[in-house]
Image 1: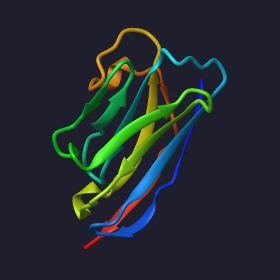
Image 2: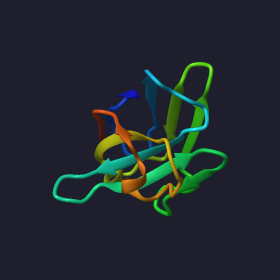
Image 3: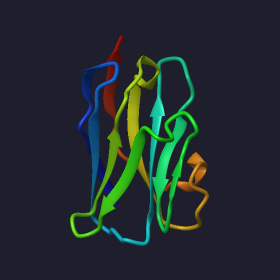
Image 4: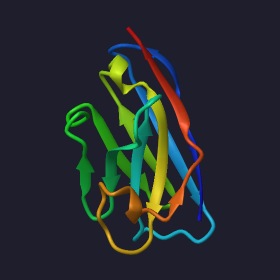
Length: 120
């Protein structure tokens, strides 16, 4: 499975961005898909995930929405009301076995990351 993340950029606080993660290769609509982020000097952290249901980190609930289009093998992360603390490199990931959506170790494949910068 190859994952290609895109859609990052520079946005002012309060603005919106939509990230996309296109999957290719051996894909399946049954795979769990997640978004994680990593800010400079910090560990990679869970943001959102989707499989049979959706999961969100408390810090993004009500502002971010994860969705998927199985026909396009693409997962999206709609990010609204962005804050400077959302600044990070965002990574998408696919989990093919088991399902613990907030656990990095459960994901087998990772995309290359896309930079999101929110200015104050």
